[in-house]
Length: 80
Image 1 (spheres, rainbow, N blue to C red):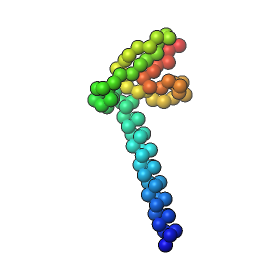
Image 2 (image 1 turned 120 degrees about the vertical axis):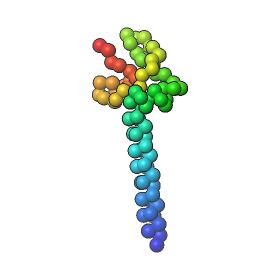
Image 3 (image 1 turned 90 degrees about the vertical axis):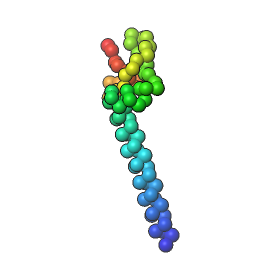
Image 4 (image 1 turned 45 degrees about the horizontal axis):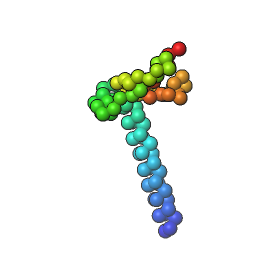
């Protein structure tokens, strides 16, 4: 009987963790969409963008995370 309880508790914990991860990724992907960002987080905050060693405040959604912008990925554009 105790093993059944542990298995149910472990299944419950795994389901909660997977649900949390899925919710995080849905929110993260949503903030990459200009419309969703502008109507939610964009109403109360702006992002900083680095251009030529100068930081500027911009109204821009998060960018997709890639190898090129891994270090500074939120609303940052890599200009070379």
